Length: 361
Image (tube, rainbow, N blue to C red; front, side):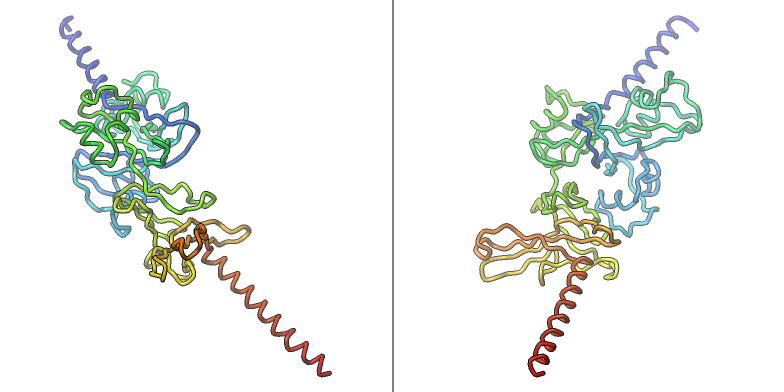
């Protein structure tokens, strides 16, 4: 091999390695937090729900469906088009001021695989050759064994942005896109994107660059001591919570979490959730305004195989003299409380009859 040919080969290898890591970036993630993030995966050819679930080890499958506003009944064989972003939920772990997917996904090396193809072609450039090698203690990235299982450390974050909880979304910048249009598309600002991503010059954005986009999340009435207190939903998504008994969605029209009882669930499995006579998610007109019943989270009862769904009754201040909304338990624990009331009534009636009998005697 001539010296010119050798130099050209080395140059091509170097350029390939540089390009494979051109778009990847680390997302800042302070503390030792855990959360769920999203990435906008763009399949290079048509794929299916089952294929994406397998590639990213998404469990349960419904988390993939709900992140993309697909019905729960969507079959695993449902076809997804190429070159259209699919929101992939990933478990995120913050460590050393950086967020990485928490030991998932795991990719098994196949014949003719190499780290460059795995990083760029299979995982969209969300990760680089060096990041895969470092995460898996690979000393020589050009020598990998077929059948070896690799952790793919995808970027993520759990940090609040400007004091507000958000859902961090990894976005691949398209050819010809700019920060202003990207910010408008995802409901944030160019200034926020520049700060979060450490961008000094907005014109420096290039195709394939990975951006950390903080998606605004709907606010809610969920209590801080509830099991799902950290439930965050961005616009255009929904989720099932409270043992699948409650369906919550997020809409940019109100930016308030909208929760209702899940339709089709058995009453023996899910308790009726009300604020008095008002069903969760409903409102009613009163003489002094509109009252509403909102979801406030769920808790597991101590020493019992049941759970309690909390609700929040909000009434106009003219009706409750400015008092704050009242959290009301509903469900199995409420039924137990009703049984106690029945026994109290029985005892009262017993003594009421017993006392007159003594007076007559």
